[in-house]
Length: 204
Image (cartoon, rainbow, N blue to C red; front, side):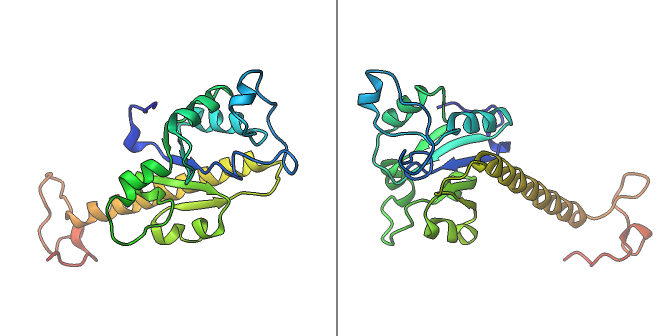
């Protein structure tokens, strides 16, 4: 899978598959069917706008992952989306989740734990998955019904999550700096009780 050079600094967004990117053409607008013989190999239909959204997010600097409880193979998912000009940065299916997240833990974890992979925003159709996002350390966007503006809404949500994360990081960085003590004009740590330390709590 593709990896960005500054992967640790890149925000990750993940999508579920069924009822999110794979939808029923009887209830949702979809991308055109694949040409023969691929339409017989890949029966799933993509929500209209899926390739555009994923490629746009990646151009904006996001990593885009699949995180699904489906047992479809990584090769199958990768090849299907390649037919639409889409290349995910990584794919987590049920097998990988069991192998890397659940492992041999005696307690059963949720079907998806995006925060394990440092995913900041996960798009899913299941209320239960979205409801425990805050508890598990990730933001969630619930998507299932037909929505002509779904692409714009997800981009806006991703930007919001990214902005909040930057503010939290900036605040945490500020706390670290304030905890190191002040510096006087000579470049040396200021003495206790000096103007630079005014209003600060004594360091333990």
